[in-house]
Image (cartoon, rainbow, N blue to C red; front, top):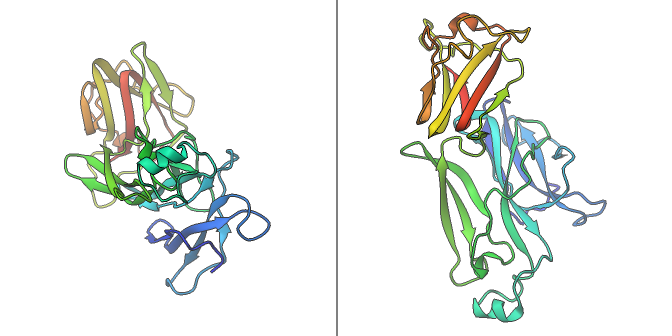
Length: 298
């Protein structure tokens, strides 16, 4: 029970780790309540007996105060845990006393500001903070620039039409306090962007297998991608040597145009990539006026 439990702390069953996990707020200083507000993790097999806390690390990124962490498995890829965390900036005051009085905020809660940041982890004690910018900015209006507002609520919620919802607390310490819902496309947290002039991205070596319990007669590469009317996506499959695999070259790739949460990549001989299953390959994506959000084999 070593932690700063005056905050929202989260737990869940991890299918990928086969354990219950709990992520909670701690401080990283040498004495209690000193240093930066941070996050630690414990594990359990039965939800009764827990391991000793292990502090999360952030990959050498600049330290910041992280309040609520809201770490949960992403339901479309549950081996990846996403954290839409509250970044707290103590003493970073935006409002004057007169402005604070005008919006009727609690006098003790307007000398700081906060926003929401995006982190990810695949288990263990490392958060990836590839993106240090705010994921959700405070936005216009003085009411959004007070202490402890803009804290995300728990959960990335699937919605009809291939959309996700994230709920954020607004107007903290004010009579107008409420939750606001933000929406984005499935997997739309980040993207590989190709400008009008074109761009490319090649993956590391990877292997894939058709999902168990599915039709084993074929396997397809599915992409979540959006292009402009003049845009496109093409995909090439490279072998270990870096050379295109016959039948899966960029010249063989049929042009992808449109906006789809899930669509199979096709080559001249069709979409089937089952002949490549189990082989180390790289995927080369060529994009023009397009965003690639996610890929998976099915």
